[in-house]
Length: 481
Ligand SMILES: *Cc1c(COP(=O)(O)O)cnc(C)c1O
Image 1 (cartoon, rainbow, N blue to C red):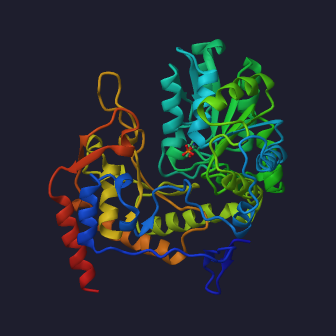
Image 2 (cartoon, helix red, strand yellow):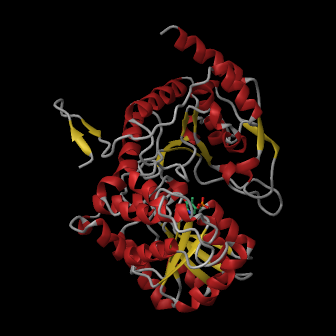
Image 3 (cartoon, rainbow, N blue to C red):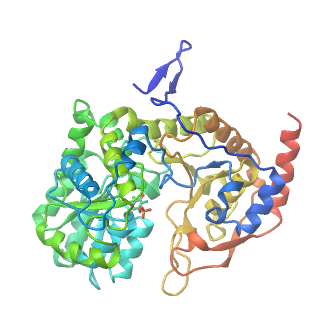
């Protein structure tokens, strides 16, 4: 139970937890936000948190911990080698995923670094349902290329397809035929495909992918960072799985893949990460690199307190009430915005609400980063910090040309158990105002552009005085209320 019927017939999402610890936040005035935005080079990654009202940048490392997680942190067994804490985390991973081996790593991209170093060679190909920024960077860094085999609906921002994260089986077969199985480092399925709006795959699709991989002797890797949301959607949208428990669905998924890795900044509401596998050969190769890049085998760059919190967080993820919170709050935002005519990605996915910036700012060309401009504009008029997920998040090609993203999205993450319905209602109101005044928003250009993952540290400038004019219009409208 996580949706409540009101007497009016309306349904609202319901928090199945109560708040025990709070953090005070403040809403800086518009003039201060304009100043903060300038200082941040119009990049929301570079804003100071004290200038942010609702931090919807990401769900990474900012999900609220439970009382049980905090309590477990006090039991942490601090030792370099052979810590009991590691034993508890290893056992929990073995129990939930049913894989014999577990390797700790300090976060999701650290797992990707290890996997790419072991599996990717110059000329290798990785086939995936959709790429992720850090995953692709590590594969490319090791000389490989990423081939995407997404279904057509993946890029349709408005759709009713329940599993837009599914892999296109014909494209997978075609890519195997084109490159030859010997060149394919691994096939990667990302749960809750991040860059297309936290869109899930179905258990049936994963099973079909597994059969193809098995036929060609290919390693199947699951990026389980956003697994919690994907579990919720399988339970809710896949008829064959309705009678299964969350734990059974998790095992159903795990049994189909050779390697599972995850960012525990997301899965398990803590910080850290890990790799699970039954494959002794892969485990052996990965284990050799672990002390070099992460730390000893029993901590992998994590603090023992965080490891205790992950073990409890993974167990809590096996609870329907827990995993439905983020998707249902996301759905609330998406439905309220769609009702007001704002272009949002549908059906609602996990992770957060995704606004289609290409349509929202259809007068801003892609080379002027509409999603980045929208992120800056929304912060300016609301203090809400979102994240650009569009062309800024792509890298230029070898000749220095822009590679336009398939989608230009502004992501407003809904970190798990953090925000309330009134805060989301505020977000809906300010986004609706911005949509009515969208013509006031202009484009951005880079003034400092790093070569890799430029969206993190790049600095930009507006192409006109649009931020000043937008701030004035906002002040004028809201002063009248
Ligand atoms: C966040 C994320 C990662 C990287 O995890 P970090 O802990 O941030 O390094 C990898 N894959 C997906 C799908 C993610 O969402």
